[in-house]
Image (cartoon, rainbow, N blue to C red):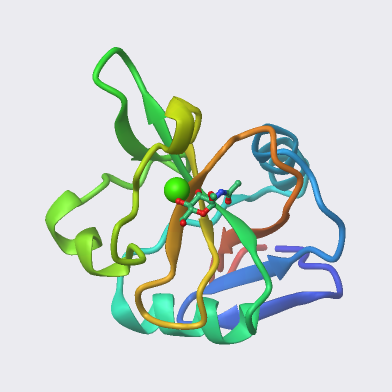
Length: 136
Ligand code: 2F8
Ligand code: CA
């Protein structure tokens, strides 16, 4: 597994914190071009690693809405656990402000850090690539 400079290892995954800003979709395309996806968040320790490394800057994560019901899902195909994820939203979020917020970012420097924002906003972003042990 080739992992270039600029990726940080944490609990079985490599993470890339971009310096440049992109729309949510362009960010996801960038991640895919690097064998990764915009990051999912599935544990408190992962959430803590992400918001601490984000250090108060705002980053896209791999959470967006699909379908008529506008259900949240992880773009890396991790099942979205609505109950377990509740604690990671900033209080009052997601609020779908002006009916135009269908992508999520890490905004606050706290376990409660997620905000929903317009997908065409230009933000930094976090890619995640699982570490594959013993790849030839
Ligand atoms: O007050 C929370 C609210 O703040 C902003 O809207 C005024 C955010 N907008 C963007 O990030 C573009 C909302 O998403 C957020 O809910
Ligand atoms: Ca919002």
